[in-house]
Image (cartoon, rainbow over all chains, first blue to last red):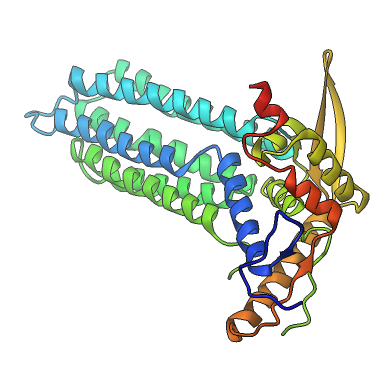
Length: 221
Length: 135
C-alpha cells in the first residue's frame, strides 16, 4: 500500500494508518481513564486547597494565643464546615458518575476501601472529643487534633491500601502519616500550619500523579 | 520496516475504541451496554455488530442481568482481549518506531478496512445516535 502517513480516511473505508491508530488508541484510553476515575485531578486539587485553607485557618485563629488555649475561631470552623460539605458532595457525585454502569470485583473492592476510609476518618477525629471532655491540657489538646487523628488515618489507610494493592493510595496515605508525625514536633499552634502545608503538598502530588497516569500513552514509551 | 503485524480485528477505529475503553477498567470488571454506547457515541445497531465480532474472537464476554423488569447487558474484556490489545500496542509501537527512523518512507504500513467495517464507521456520529435522539 502506498500512501502518505496521516492522510488516510478512517470513515470512508480507506486505510487506517498506524499513526492514526496510535492517536485513536491513546485518545480512547485517555477518555476512558478520565471517565472511570472517581478522584479526578481537579477534585484532588480542590482537596489540596481546601486542606490548606481549613488547617491554615485553624492556625491563624490560634497562632497569637498567649497563653495557648486551642480555641478555634467561629469563622475558621465555619469555613471548614462549608469546604467539608462541598468535598463530600463533590466526591459523592464523582464516585457515582465514575461507577455508573460499571460492575465487577474491582468495584466492590473500591466500595469496601471507601467505607473503611470513611470509618477511619470518623474514628480518627472521634477519638479527639473524649480527650477534650476528659480535660486534657490545652497544649496537649492543641497538639493532638492537628497530628494524632491524621496519624491514625494515614497509617490505617496505608495498611489497608497495601492490603488492597492500591499502591499509589497507600504511598499517599503513608505520606499523610509522615506529615502528621512531623506536625507533632511543631508545637500546639504550628502543628496546624505544618499539617496545612504538608497535606496540601501531598494532595497536589496525588493530583499530579493522577493526571500523569491518565495521560500516559499506551503506545509511546 | 519491522515485522510487526496489527491484529485486523482490533485495527478498525470503532473496535479499537471499544477495546481501549473496556481495557481502562480493572480486570474482570464489566461495563453496561448503554454506558459503553454513550461513551463511544455509537448507534445500538452498530455497537452490537462490533461487539459480536469481538465476542466471536473471545476478546470480550457479555452477560445479561435482570434488575426487576429491566434487563441489562454487561460487556467485559477477556484475558485474551487484553493480551490482544497489548500485542496490538506493541506492534503499533514497533511500527511507529520504524516510521520515526524512516519518516520519509512512502511505504507506511496500513490495513484496509473492509466494506462492512467502513459502513459501520459511516454510521458513527456524534449527534446522530439513537440515544441522542432519545434525549
